[in-house]
Length: 72
Image (cartoon, rainbow, N blue to C red):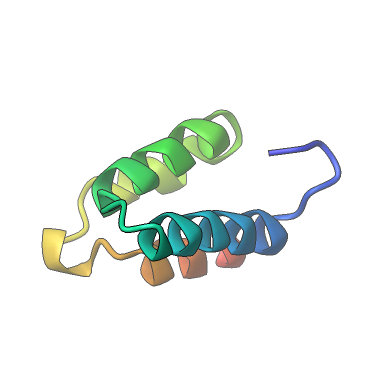
């Protein structure tokens, strides 16, 4: 993430990259994408990600993660 990016624009870029990879026939592991996002935001959002760890696996989706980041 660039210094001048906000969460919304960063998440849009991630979605676009995933879409491009899918269009090329490369299956993208969604858990891996969310882990990468965690590492990018972790220093400033550590408490939010501690709470994310307690979210049910069925609820751990990109859109839910994005909503939590935007709310924070």
